[in-house]
Length: 292
Image (cartoon, rainbow, N blue to C red; front, top):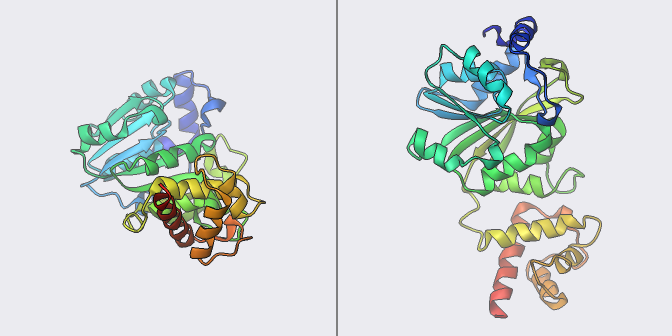
């Protein structure tokens, strides 16, 4: 590993460019070689891969990705980091730096331009404050992505992998498990970053799969049912479905759907598995079509 995990060297670089950490961007730079190695190894980057890195910071992980991959496309929101990246990554010809907000970036266009539309791998140390929106954008938009290996807040990683009955179980858990196979890589203490955050982190790998797409009749309806059940977590699933405007279901339709799905009328959504949500949404879709 290079100097970009050395706090003294990092400080010197930042001082040279008169850089100040921006709290609004959630900037915490990784300074641990072992964790960096684990991220690169778990992402399984090869010379055949094009990698999309979100939030490269000063290029710590970018440098190692560039050594392992064919091409690395970096999207960095902070314009003050662009000249620093151009300096720290000067020796690498296979890196493209894009100064933009990842949530406003056309990722499909990037794939077409830099990877001939083929699936690429995403690697990132995600800002805690927008972790979920970024993950959901990458997954819901059916972008050409093979895997997503990211550093996130430890509690968020737990929400991604947990199952029914847990207080952490919710819409994020179900979405991640619907679109991917999630796997915890390692936990990362706060002292592995500069500056040190107030929370610990976890590296998680999400391998994209299409396991469920062939058995879901209406994907939008499935996630409406999931959101409805967790919007009013303390209430019954029946009440959650009834009170969710987008579903436009009456009591009779809900009772019929729950009965057909072999679910109790007083069941709560937080105890349903993903397979049970899929079955229920398929039944609701059928009932809605029958009533047209």
